[in-house]
Amino acid sequence: MTELTSANTSSTFRDLLRNLAGPDTFNLLSLSLASLVFSLGKLTVYAADESEFFIYSLGAIAISQILVVVLLSILGKALWRAPLGKMRSWIVVGLILVLNVFGTILFEAILRSWNFEPITQSLFQRAISLAFTTFIYLGFGWTTLVLGGNFKQVSLGKDLLVSLTKQQADLISTIRDARTFAIREVSLEIQATRGTLENLIATNIPVQKVTGQIVQLQETLDEVEIRVNKISNRTPSASRMSKVHSQAKYSFADVIAASTNPNNAMPALISIFAFFGFSSWLSYFMDAIHAFFWGATLSAISFLIFRIYERNLVPRLGAKPVLFRVMTYELLVLAYLFFWLLILGFFAGDNSGSYGAALAYAAIPFIFFNGGALLGGVITSSKNYRDRLTKQASSLRKDMGDLEQIRSDEDQVWKALFAGDIALSPTTASVILRDAVLTKDHERVITAIPNVLALWKSVLLKLPNPS
Image: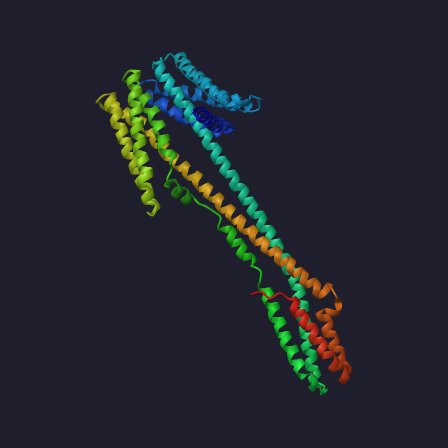
């Protein structure tokens, strides 16, 4: 049982690593964003040191990070073409670590070439910095992967919906064309039969023997006309179809609203960010063991704060206006960062310089937390949009199935009326009656009336009776 649990855990870890260290890790946009976050963290250290060569450090880090991003982009693409098998994910992580070590060495070498001495870092600080950097790069790569997958599915869903809508419009047009022709022919024969009956009455031919059948014939013609009118109103219009399609959209307001929905991953991400942030900053003011301890402690506190918020407060705010939910989240973040500021300032020393530096360092998580919430909103809203498209596509497929059944049924009816046995068609019925009336032969008219009535009743039986 223990071996099975261990195997499952190992498999889960490999799957997680494979998702984190995917091809999107080397997407130029995700690399640039990760490099920007890493650069901001390093720059705050030099800003806190009040170094006179801050501008030079800014230039050095820009040069080194641009080179790192370019190398990662080029080597990463080459890496994913190589047949590396199961070791690919580990090699991806190793490549990120190696190139960021190279970036740090290059940054410090550039400063020294300009006759400036970089800030001394301990082995613990460098290890924390590298671990944080790897977390950032993999995190942005995973986010790009998820967003890219959602956007691709949304695009496929939209294309599918457009294709189905076009197919549906074509099917409706086919049904309408066939129906227009058939209904017009039936209507013409109805009018022809009625006109012949009027002529029959005007000729004064004695038809008392078939008066009841003439009445039945007129009633049958009325019923045929009613069914034909029902058939013409049976198909939904094209304007309704386009209206259904236009409803499958989402706006920036939807993204903002979705960013305030429950996010179970947010507390863990914030605690990881807090651990690296606190540990890295505090390592400048205390030894590595104490920095690690306080970093872990403050990380756990951060997790509890946002866990309580996500589990207990967010569900209760679901019915509140979006602006209220956004302001609640912002107030929590600001209160948390004020706590962050107090802790960092306290350990750094009770002076305005240390608090100012801590404030600059605390600005990074403010951007990270809000950016993370916004990205979560994009992921959620794009997923919801994809689900709506999928639902509408399913609805369209069902409608198309109904339309196809209508087309098949009506084709059989029209073929039976106009392409089947010609002796049982409405055209034959109207021709028989007209020819009999034109001869003014009393016996022939009396003989024709029952036959014409039988023909029109057979037409009525062939026509569907839509409810």
